[in-house]
Length: 509
Image (cartoon, rainbow, N blue to C red; front, top):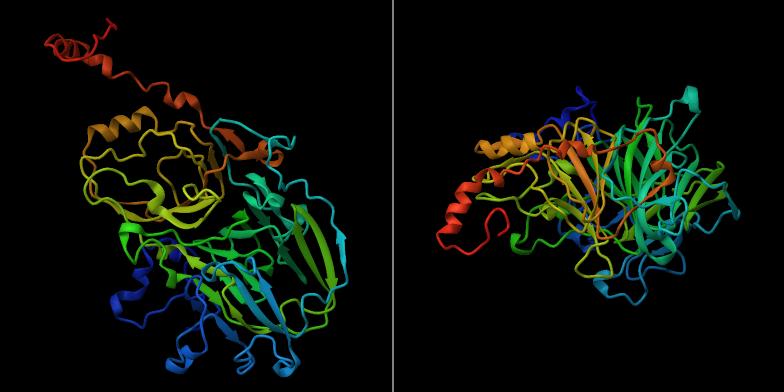
């Protein structure tokens, strides 16, 4: 399908689910938004083999050749690769990792990544952070329910050109990348494309959630076009460049960076084979190379610090590749929501798109959850989020629309945070209304997608976020009028107790 401009830039924000675009089979089905200029390979964590092409030449697999016949067969590193290319392996797991956990890819390129002119330090970015241990004076611990209004996107006239790499800001996190277990939450605020600059995160994998503006991402494996309502994963060690889509001048979004783990699909358990985020809806790039002798700058993030190397050739010169360590993207409108069709709320794990395991098999390092358009049909059930405390750290963001259950100050591009075991729930007025009226069968979250970065790890807050003028607190007074309704039934209860039921009287005697 050739790319076409959107008549309405919010076209995909107004649909209930991706299925609407398929017109009940009246048109040929398609898997990408009509303004996406690239082609992709479907599947998650797959590793294709060449033989699939012999059976069905239209079936994509996890190998790609911009020039047919480039990938060597029967071996990975022949004495001479076709066209004089270099074979380079990217290994992301221990060599002896079990087969189902082993992650690596082979790239066949014009020049290997080792061809550069050495590393130099870059100045520290005071707005980013990697060490979230409480002994770090640059991070803060607080049980207060915090929130931030949308962060301002820099303007070129006032701030100069700020690209994705320069516009990183850290909100919160846990651990330290050198410990190989932990995570960080960032936002990116940019007004320019990365011009002859590429980035490598040597610390961990990045789940990128655009909120304002589309990301035209160049990777070693090929291009990805990622719009608000979509996400992408760039894994540790993979070089990439973020550009603005044609006609756009600003970028804003969120990043969940994880250390010592990789994103995977959550287990479905009793759901069976299908539901939530289906593996075939994840899209991986096809090889597309660029050969030039221009000067390039490669930015490396290692241990939270930034370094650079320079080279006089394009870092995106991969002609062909195969493997299972590949960047990908996913359209959130394809998420298959599940829920109760009788009574009660199911735990929010039903909204999990991706998870990253920790060393504790019962507690994930990170979950990425979304709250998107869906039906709510549970009867005899209190509709708003029930009052609760749980062990997870919860950091929410809003991609577009309005999200019920948060204040009017929870806006697209903003952030809301609650640490583990801090109680939360709605104000009394909403509780009273929801208790008084039977909930209707209703479609909720229409025209909206909110998300949650959730972790079993406690978060600390960075100086940049703590001192931001965008920070505010959830007003505790909103719960002041949560009245004691039980005491209004004092006489009724005393009468029951007087009839010999076990218990104590209302005055404690």
